[in-house]
Image (cartoon, rainbow, N blue to C red; front, side):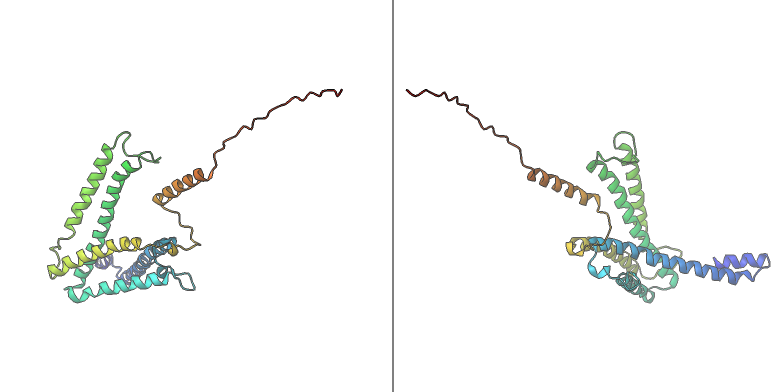
Length: 249
């Protein structure tokens, strides 16, 4: 990008603008990096306070910043930076990390398209603000299936090393992509399986998911029906006796 700007400024005889653009791009990249670092960690922190992450990830510093999540995030990035040692160039290192990001995104998209189709059958009567297809599920199957197949094709092609740059050993390339994808995908399932009620922060305002609300509603309805006594009125018959006095003789 800088080369393009530099050539353009030389063409218009304004080469002095190149350093200014370089500084502006540096600030832009820094702002983007800060957004990428703080944004996901803030989301994980909010979910963690709702009870989906251990208390270790819910700790903050005196400014309210999620310090432990940032420490773990920094450690993971440091480990990934060790790929500089085994990759032949910086470009190949950046390429393999980009491919790993694409693989993770495509897994999410495949789950999203699959979930859209499954929810059509599990939650048929849900009041949806927008519905694909006026009647039946044929159009949903077509769009969801098309999106899933496109994501699956891109997912498979993402494992093929690019021919434009030297990526080094194919073993390292496939190992990083496969192991990285497995670790990132499996980690949430493991943490969710170990979830405990004590992880919930009582001060959180995180709204529960719909699959958590339905059992509560059913349980409250059952308990209300059990606790409400059934009125069985009993009729106490009363007998009326007429006493007639007899005169004494």
